[in-house]
Structure formats: C-alpha cells, structure tokens
Length: 260
Image (cartoon, rainbow, N blue to C red):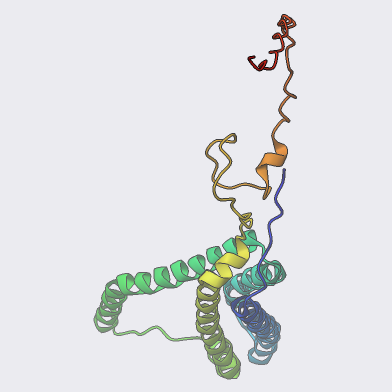
C-alpha cells in the first residue's frame, strides 16, 4: 500500500527567495551588458587613438586589445555563470524542488569562498607589493631614469578613464549586492517552514487503541477496525454421541386405600 506525500502550502519565505533570485539575475545581466558595452567602446577607442597619435608600436596596440578582452572576461564570465545558475533554479525552487535548493546553497558557498579567498589573498600579497614598490624606487634612484607611459597609452587612458571607472565600480557594487542577496536567499530557504516545504513527509494514519490482540504490537493501524481483516473463525461442530439408553418408567403409585 502506498501513501501519498502531501506537500504543505508554499510558505512566504520561498516566494521572497524566488523574487530575490530574480533580482540577482537582473543585476548580473545588467553588469554583463555594461561589461560588453565597455569592451566594444574600449576597442573603438584603441583604434581611434592609434590612428590619432600615429607611429604607434603594433605590439602595444595588441597588448591593449588583449587586456581589454581579459578584463571583460574577468567580469562577464562569473556574472554570466551565476545569472544562468540563479535563473535556472528559480522556478524549481518556487515549485518545491529540493535539488534546486541544494544548487542555490552551492552557489552561496561558492560566492562566499571566492570572496574570502580574494580578500585573504590580497592581504597575503600585500607585503610582496610593498617590497616591489620599494625595489622599484631604489632602481629609479640608482639609474636616474623613471619609466613613463607612451603617448598612445596616456591618450587612451585619459579618454576612457570615466567609462572604465564606472564599469569597475559598478562590478564591485553588484558583486557585494549579489553576495548579500545570496546569503538572504540561503537563510530563507533554510528556515523550518521552507525546509518542511522542500522535504514533505507522509501523514501518519490514526492509531487504534487498544490494539487488537491477534495482530500483535504495531506502531499504528491503517484500518480503524483491524478485526475486519482477520480470518473468520470456522463454525463450531457438534459431535453426536451414542443414544442414551431408555430408562424404565417408574410404576405408578397406587393411592392409599382407606383402612376398614
């Protein structure tokens, strides 16, 4: 006998988590669009500045185009992966899929691990950066010559400074907002009402007390009248014995005669 699992009504926490996931997807798609627009704009500026300055080293132009692509991929690929991740799992989460909820938990853990790793890595690399700056200062003092950007690089950076600043500042803000939204979604989906919604249990049938002695100890009974499922007892048979012997009838007692 199979017992149907009854899913409880969807709690408000799951609905709020669904809309938060959609908000995170919208933010990620927006920053992805800004990154692609910046890449197209920056590539056009490279061509324009190279034609304006003239006599530019082709290797320098090639390096700027490569750095433009790398910067776009650095921002766009994580945003695209996370947007697809949240977008694919949003609808199943609303319908109560426990697998989709697990994938949301994995996304939250991955973001937290990435943010923690970048922060700790920055602190660990700080001494190396300071030592490199000190070494560079000593080299300048010993040689008497400092490294300077070319005219092409100075012109390019001055023309794209505002747009590049908006892109990287926006990417940082979106990363912080998406991380906060992910933490909120994970907490909402982990609350007890949401947990019962994603892992429903079969309802327990009513117990019969006292239990029927012929069924033995059982945790509960499906049927309110267990005796109805017991085999019927065979009808009682009466065995006929030998006929009883006839007893002679007692003689009738004569009435007392009056004495003369």
